[in-house]
Length: 198
Figure 1 (cartoon, rainbow, N blue to C red):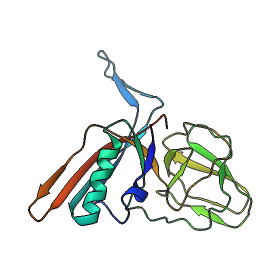
Figure 2 (figure 1 turned 180 degrees about the vertical axis):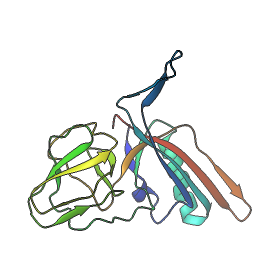
Figure 3 (figure 1 turned 90 degrees about the vertical axis):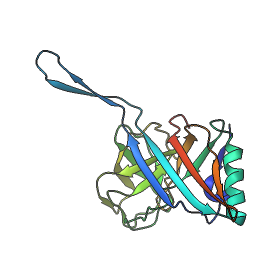
């Protein structure tokens, strides 16, 4: 299994439309007698994406075809960012790495103490996992706890944290092809889920 970087294999191609969804692993149980509702949340929440690329031609069309074929369905993985993301936080990510983390907090440390802000709604990635910040945080110290969702799956320390171009690692949900129209224009639809074991 190989993980390919979408931006390297298909440079300068942006989706015409994209849909991102956090699929939660929670269930609701309702009592048949009292109708009382109870919720159980379990680990395993992950991102689901749906991307459409309309009317690609020439070099872009060929590179997208090669990318789709190279993945061989669900055999390989690919990393990709949300192309609609614009970071709202400020400050450099210089030297920002993970520390021991659990649950919905990604603990980070860094070698510099300049002001760093991560805004709610900003994506970030670390340890092959993509997160969204759920609470604004500003820090001028070298230790930064960031509230995130989904929960931290891997608590490795010392891994780089990406704030500028955060990516997730995804696996196709099935086989993908393309439609071709006269003039040699092709359209592609990609459906994928985050690889929680990446």
